Length: 271
Image (tube, rainbow, N blue to C red; front, side, top):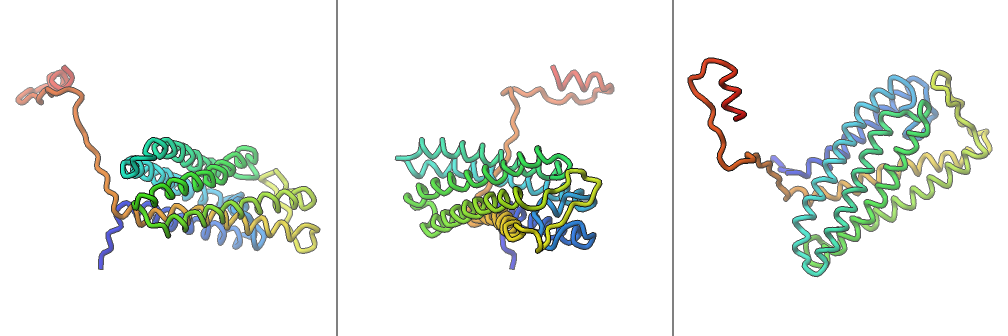
């Protein structure tokens, strides 16, 4: 049976491609012995060739995320008409969500192209754009979902699911920041020279447990953000888009026929 996903293919492909990216880079980094058994996402892509694979695939993921947030923006522009009382508020929140989605997608591209050990400052900015922008995006979209569930556009259970995911991703990110900061202060300092092997975390390190908690929380944060975008699948299945091409003038100049020179054809097109 052929299941027609419609534009639901966007969040579906985003989730699948992101999972493939994480798995491939992790396997390569472990086979080459470039990372510990449970590294951060950035550590799996800090050295070549895994960094090249991660950069290529994650750029596509960032582009898919941008398309997904753009389709969501257009969908809500249309669906906001169903809530006449809060229509103006929903339109403003929809624009805010679109800007946050663009920021998070841009952060994904930055992370893909600026490795942690080569350009750590830029990489950190990209990571903050992904996580902070993505978390704020989830909360704004959750509030929009609350308003849309009140007028019957989506089910109340879908709204509850999105709020639960937003709460989870916020908790995971808070744990990640706290644990990583504590481990970074008293634990192993990474070497910023990309041509040298980075020192490994071991169970003998004093704050090893905080390092592991921070890594686990980072992975959970990223996967939960992807899960939130995947909740659009059901709505996107019933959304369709079309591109309309039209001339700027109401009286187009017809193409000339029977002209033998390129200059004549050019003149007929641009008079």
